Figure 1 (tube, rainbow, N blue to C red):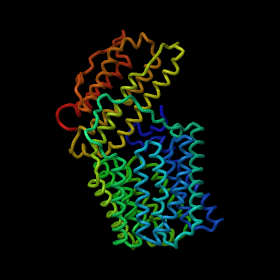
Figure 2 (figure 1 turned 120 degrees about the vertical axis):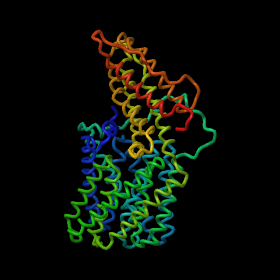
Figure 3 (figure 1 turned 180 degrees about the horizontal axis):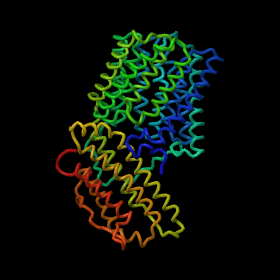
Figure 4 (figure 1 turned 180 degrees about the vertical axis):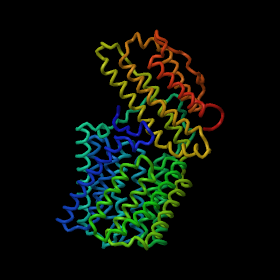
Length: 526
């Protein structure tokens, strides 16, 4: 099974051993990057923001490049070094010419989102590119004079060192047998959906919409931050960025925005109380900061509130380390966080908004296309010379389907929250139905690869019926004419009267298809 699909399985994936191991590897790389940056800072007589950059870059890369191959890591390191140099220059520009610096920051971050339209590798490049710019918001709160030109090269070097340590620890962990660190599943397109109808008019790509939303949110946050919070403006801008980043529809951004704002506010309050126990420059506060970051890295999959709360708590502790009194600033920080969250949510809702139900429909259609490809995988006789290749193809198609379910799960939380609040059930039921297909697909993959042609022939009618129902449900999603979904009634039992595992898995798939069909079939809009 593809090793980067750790989100598949129990929905509280942060409690899984794989998530804990990934967090441990991430923190090991982060600590190595921290030590290297400290050494470089002392030797070159640099400012401490170099160290902050190394920590932030390593912690983020450990998530972005989980399971990445060497070409992806090489491209990421080059992009990261160039971006770090650019972010250093923008940081100085903000201090010299505030409006120009704010505009440069906004354009750079929006561009990192816009380039996602060019595919998965471009998406990962954009995610890496934005990391030093987010770090800029942390270091700006420390003040200080503009950096000299040579500082840009030091920033690039430190970012490259952080990327090196992330690669060393992740590749090493994968070599020692940690499956979640191994190479991620390559993105191989499945067969085109026969139900997809050509759009009546050209739509604005989702990446362009999200880039525009981010640009508006950041521009408004810069204006409000400078106007109301003065030197504490980074809190508003950082919160607006956090709320807008990765938004997958209006319901998603509202759900994340509220969780992130609540988490950030609670984290700030708690950290303010803790920071008062340490004097400035106390080494124990550094230990607490890394402990909080480790918690953030581990619990991010559980809830965005944990991530936002832990990161803002770490920032509060960091500022306390540098001598900023946390108590008097608590109210200002909370107000800036709430303002940034409100601006981020408003931008995502009213600037070229993405409807969550449209995002879900597209991802469900992709998932069913992958499931159709899986059931259509070619199989030979067990002693066929091409059998090994065909079984490998079966495993690849299974993993593609699991990957599409992971993408559906990314937008599941707001839909389940709506169901909990009695605001709708169909869309959440669709997500659950696709999640329920994961285990039957694994069972069926095992049965298809190990069974003989005679054994497969026994439940071939049920196999064909389920495959036909997948096509029917895809037609229903695309509003295309054709035979409707009909429950598969074929059954195969052993001589003892028990259903074979393959037949049981196919029946489970058909039951899930019935749920998806009920949500999308009929005259009403999904």
